[in-house]
Image: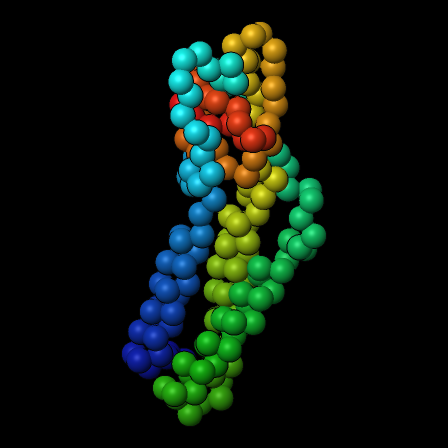
Length: 162
């Protein structure tokens, strides 16, 4: 039982749109805003230092079950598959097949989106060796371009790249 060409095209288009949406969900480290940046330092910087270590905090604080993305994606995919099939065929069997295929594709995409969104939910702990020899640890949601060995200023509970 082969599906007519319009159903194949619609299904391929829906799958491509879902995969494109999954690629847009990013939690890449190093991309952060500089909103609220500290004022410039004149003279000696007493609250500056070098980053010695960066720890990625776990996502154990998340209260969203791991299957939520897959379940919601499956529901959306099933509804989309059924609607596309309804407009392109009168066959109940083909509509059921499109519904099942949409549910599977939606579940895969929904799971991928959830995994990427939760990857760095816990943020980062940045350890800084200060100019006076002490060590400070700050926890923040993004790195803002900071890497180990970066020279930073610790201001208002956050490390800022200098």
